[in-house]
Image (tube, rainbow, N blue to C red; front, side, top):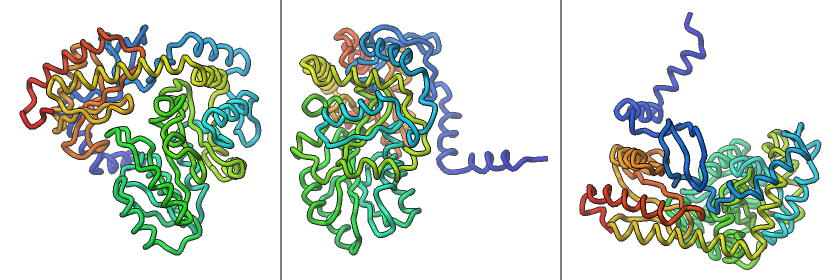
Length: 411
């Protein structure tokens, strides 16, 4: 007897995405380099995968705080203090350190209030549908993060109308807003930093547009958190000088090297979001030991040491950008620690990533559907604790790839 679960799996294997993935897995079984298992993490950015030692240029622990003794000690302290798990939904209880962390995040970010979720994805999945009703509308940048796109689908299922506007296009957004009227309220959902391209949105123009059109600006600033803005506050406050009519979403992983996501919001929305965010009510909370670590990172971010850390990161980032251009490759980004080198065809991208790996350097070879078809990139993430020797080694290996690239890809 063939069980329905088996026929379901077979049917799903025939979807276009799965056929594409399986096709490349079959054609290039030794190049795919996805779903890797890391055997060991060493000092600096060393790691071991399948008994092969590499330097990790794929980590989003941008400031290297995942290996900071103070952060690790805070985690141990949190385990001793709280145990390994909260034991209930936050709708019932929160450890005191969770409440303190939210208060400290708001003070650092300069918002009235903050609410912590288990991840940025769950922040968006809970907050966006929770902020709108069938009387409202959402306007979403076409390149907004996948978690925003998925959250708008949930909102749409609840009756909210959803419109997509061309990337960073103020005029097209204006036209979409005019065509969508009437609505009660609207969300304009964008990224603070678009990680694949490194682009920033025209925040001031979007903010002014929101104020004129009964809309709220919702900014997923996960890739700006900790690495852009004064003391790592991200893109919003430095661009606007205010959070008036803005919701700021940030990451507690990446530069924080901890766990979770948060939304900075006005006091009046704090309780509403607790009640109306399904991912907050029904999702397991951040493990309580991490709040002691988050508080430790906030101490670092609000001290003069942060300037030293960000300077090291910026030096490494500039070294990489200048070096990549010097060897004749294009590079996207440079404002944030995520750099993309366009390669093009999926096979070429996978081969380039595999070659780097064999030479002792791990970067992410990103292909469709994360980027457009035949728009593959090598995604390199600079960290503050990369050494000059490690960066020079990566650049030397990239030069070997550049020598094989056609003239059209030269910078």
